[in-house]
Length: 441
Image 1 (cartoon, rainbow, N blue to C red):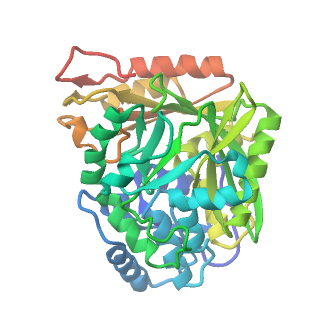
Image 2 (image 1 turned 60 degrees about the vertical axis):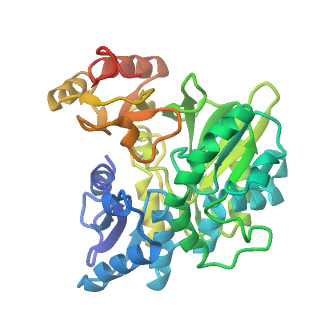
């Protein structure tokens, strides 16, 4: 397990925006020696409450907490998506701490702006796209892309309100859903957009807009890296496997099994686009598709943060989670991520899902979880639902399934990895009111 080396002088105070128990434990395992003191700065539950909270209000609460702190404030970090990705640069810059600029962060996470900037440097990897005002019937009626295509808000996460549009009937079915729900994130995102000067080509495409994109296919993966003093570096590539519906993820697996030359092309593209947008002193992850039939690589999206979903994978294979890179950058230090120093040759995050709405009547007990961990040492289990929860009331789900649990497993080869996954799923029972007892998939 990675530990920080003991250093002379007082501990560095690291403030984590959007504290949650799983990642907080990972951070403490990284900083097991005497170098860091980790503090929560707004809990994740506060930020992602049922009622949207304006960005200014979150900033005031965070600033009040920082002002009350008696010691030094040495770094501010976050590993969750919006609004945390925007809170970190604003809070950091107010205190002259290392961070990417808010403008460069917004260039990544505003899907339309990101496409515009990416097209300037890697046009061959950017699919056809259009901005769409979902409240404008004329724009909805004249999306000049062939079916099928994706329609999604210009700011979302976990595929929230993202729909695969196969025909006119699909479009007519989803537009009311988008209109009714896009404001939940869109209004907050507009608060962030007002803090920067938008270029003419993006001005007017705000958080209540969507982007329509042609479908891109192939094997999906994520390039994880960082920018330190203007130099872009990549430390890992993670494969993303989808379920049979092609819309929801079944697992993330590290290291990638893509050919080395394909990974090199993706890394080169990531380096070019991150340099172009002026992103610096922060981690990132860039998602791509590779079509083996024609050798084509497509850029999917850019995320201005580490992927916390990958943290345990890097720890199991490389010996330290990607939180290490995040903390070092926030302290202004050059990152030193280890390579292949972990216990396992490969690792994955598996998703247990339910397709269709239901009332959860039973979730795995602590004994069930302990049995998995006894049979599969180093397995980590995160149960994401509680008994008597109506799945349709869960927040931040994709448009086609409900996430029940995450299972993190390491192994010496993929065959053993998938065998362990099957056994873990067998040992984690969920029950629902709308059907007989079944194993989640």
